[in-house]
Image (cartoon, helix red, strand yellow):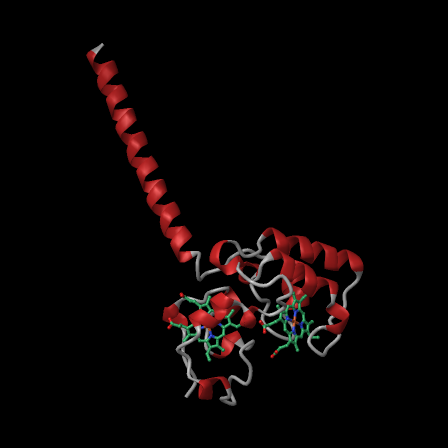
Length: 163
Ligand code: HEC
Ligand code: HEC
């Protein structure tokens, strides 16, 4: 009898400890997740990562993605048109992983990540001259400064400003 209750106490302790560890890991993941984006889709990578990096879906709200995807034939001065099935598939991926919370605060007609309030706030300290630097050229060229952007990693430790 005594061994049984000791055994139970042991089980409860192990269970509580592992629950606590899980919570710690989940919280860390959620915090790191604010500047690291891992959601991926093979067609999105192939079709949206050729002219520029495949911008993480978490950086624009769903209504914006819907607008981007419905105007691909006239995409920022180029034709990025896709067959309807591929476009629909990528659209679902983008909307399912779209921005939430503060990053979702964008006018419904916003097509650009670089025009959202969160982008402008995060980049307010970047000097105007850097945006015009020949290695940058456009704000949309994330990888010019976010050296690991192709892996969805925008953490500060991987930012290198061109000089
Ligand atoms: C044929 C080339 C091409 C393809 C393919 C393409 N894009 Fe673009 N995209 C562009 C150009 C050019 C710009 C404008 C870049 C700039 O302003 O410097 C752009 C800009 C964007 C922007 C706005 C960036 C900003 O300023 O915040 C988004 C969002 C975007 N593309 C999403 C997509 C998605 C989603 C796909 C795949 C369905 C895609 N693009 C495929 C050429 C392309
Ligand atoms: C000219 C260099 C430059 C370019 C280009 C640039 N960024 Fe940044 N970005 C920065 C700097 C610098 C910071 C850090 C600002 C600070 O902490 O003061 C930053 C911060 C961020 C953050 C927040 C990171 C964190 O850990 O808080 C995100 C997300 C981000 N940028 C996304 C993007 C995206 C997406 C693009 C392209 C559409 C982009 N950036 C283009 C320089 C750049």
